[in-house]
Length: 275
Image (cartoon, rainbow, N blue to C red; front, side):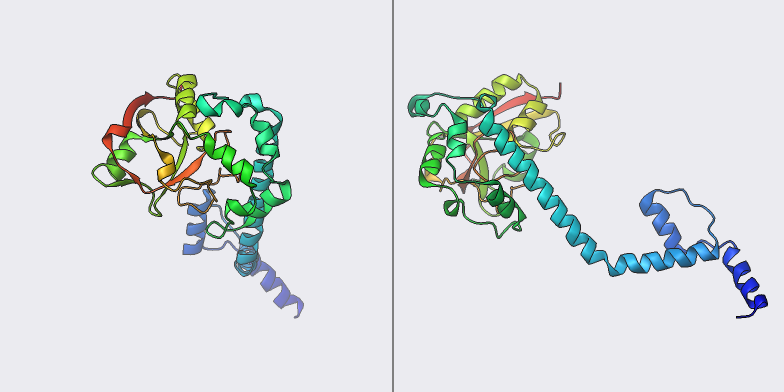
């Protein structure tokens, strides 16, 4: 390339580039204010774009692994916190549950390790192992005893009216539903004193996910009749807050019930708002 051609190429690179449809899309997607680019900057952008698209799958895999690892660490931190600070979890001594006063002892005997928690959370939803394969028998028995006085589930009344009013079952599309012990739900509602943020925190809902309004509480007196078991994390209702071991991220025991009948006699209404 001679000096004249080099000068012409340099001049072309420095010329303002016209905004094309791709620029408009990027501006809309990123929210960046449009600015005038040179032809040279457009060439560099095009090269970066090609590199980005060729590495998109690799980047997505890295992000997924990072998020899974971070969630595993956060979940293990939460489990360790519960193990070390059992007073944070409400102790409900009713009937045969009187012997279950130290939740930290129960968790320490679960058989779960940080490595196992990370392994379970790294497994895609739908392929996670049955808790029977990593929790010991005594732990499971003690866990299920916490539901001898019934199980409860809370949802916005609008959700009940939309999804469940007039249908025979209260369950997700896979036939399952998460439940807390009725004793605990009664205790949580009392502690919350109408504050919806307390419900979110204790039951493992993402912060801000519940809106002010009327809520329906489903109480089941005989949960053992509905294939009661510890969640595996494969259930339709398992969200990013789920951790293995049968407790919400807020430290409340939980089980799965299947094909729960929709009986209006088992449903009561409360009003909750963010305070």
